[in-house]
Image 1 (tube, helix red, strand yellow):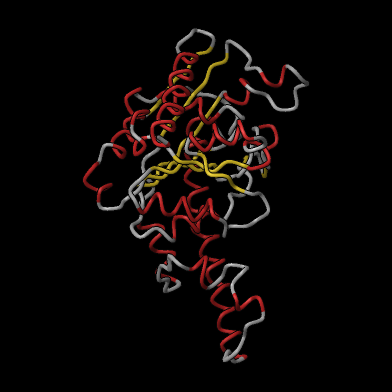
Image 2 (tube, rainbow, N blue to C red):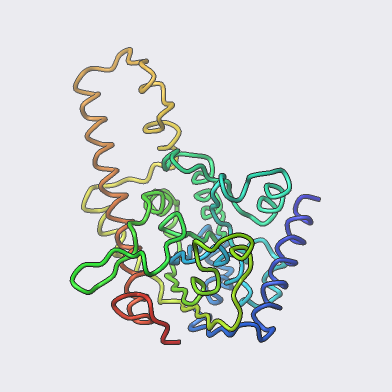
Length: 301
């Protein structure tokens, strides 16, 4: 019953988004969609536990789900060809109705400020290990182009969250990682409008969705190899989770040297997560510069 309700929620939402994109109320250009479709249709690799990760800039509250209105409708009928995503508890899970809708829409409730060791991140890793598709907004919140930090005439996205690095480091098999770049959605749903206008999309906007080539797994493996990293799927619950007994004071049998080694290992893991996350951010930004220029604010669709 739960699976049927989830499929119905995703299908209805996807068809509604597809109807809006084809209504003439806006226009949309999609580039290289085949890259994502090829990854989703590679059943052999996915059966063996290779997941798919898409990572995009986040420029409006309608990015997800509206962007997935560009997919073939038949993909909505299968949970393995619809994305899982992480959604902010204080925005998307504010009442029982919204909570039920987003959970059935394969959105994982995420608590801002709770760090990278929380159930939503654990479940995202689990979904990838089962060969499923997880979509990430690396910034963790909406940031529109006028607010991007700039240096020497070049804009950058705000720093991606380290949860991206943790997810990619702890998958059993490196997933296919596809960068995406969205344009126009910030004009469709500009921030800081007054109520009730802020709840309605503007019309006549040109939207764009671009998919980039998968990020070479060798780039990530090079970072991990440099630190002699060995994946620890249980790391979050055993070694470094804040609720770990070690951090609760249960240090029986643990020498000062062991504690120091532990701290050093944690520091190394933080560096690796940061480095892996930076690889993903650079790939998304590079695609953004191809599409939108150095200021990341123009559509060339």
